[in-house]
Amino acid sequence: MRFEFKERYDVKDLIEIVKILRSPEGCPWDKEQTHDSIRKDFIEEVYEAVEAIDQKDTEHLREELGDVLLQVVFHSVLEEEKGSFVFDDVADEVCKKMILRHPHVFGDVKAETKEQVLNNWEKIKMKTNSIKTIAESMDEVSRALPSLMRAEKLIKKARTSFLISSEAETAFGAVQEALDVLKEAYEDGDKELCKDELGRLLFTVAGLSEFTDSDCEKLLYDTCEEFINEFKGNEDVGILKVLEIQDLPAEADRIRKEISEKSKQED
Picture 1 (spheres, rainbow, N blue to C red):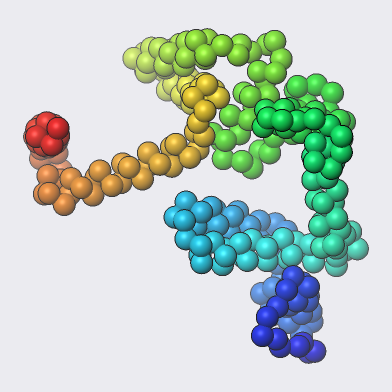
Picture 2: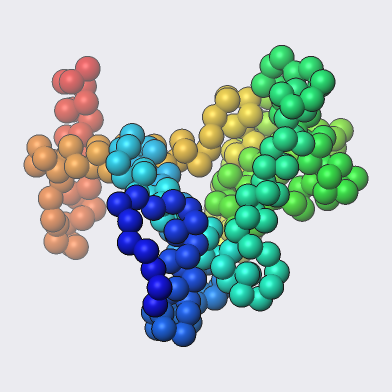
């Protein structure tokens, strides 16, 4: 194996390392990997990088971005082995895309607000991808996205047509209607309809993000964190404890009362 050890490496070195790992004399595990086998790894690395961003941990972010870059390089090397493309082709294509989609920077187009930038971006994207209808544009939204994020994108695209209202009042009404139908299905004991309507309720709630300038995926993440912290806080003061199964109903009522009293005292 020929490899030059250095004090500092760059992207070219990373590409070479992956090629060595994939070579006959390389690593038994790396040699067996395919796009499908490391697909989950790619997703996990991106989420870990996002977690580092949320934690504002610069050192952790640097490490996780390296892991994401490794995934990009690995997939590129897999395609290079098949003669499809190389890493430089990936870099070349994204550079050309950024230049093309920023005509207000690299051309003569005027865009003084972020709304104008996003509008131009969407129009250029549809033109370059030969997308002619809103439905085709919606079909381009990745199915691998978290469902709340995907729902937001689909609804936003749909609102560019006249088929879905862009009025906030209508969006809030759709949420209330979905909730009412779900409640009625639950009271009727129709579990299948409950599933359908719960899905519709979640979808319509995602439709409120545009009017509240929110990111539903991030909001739900933050709420989960708040829920955990509140639970920990209640455990710390001894309000919650391990209960015998037969004591749960009575204890649950007592705990709720104690939490309510505690909240009143804090207020």
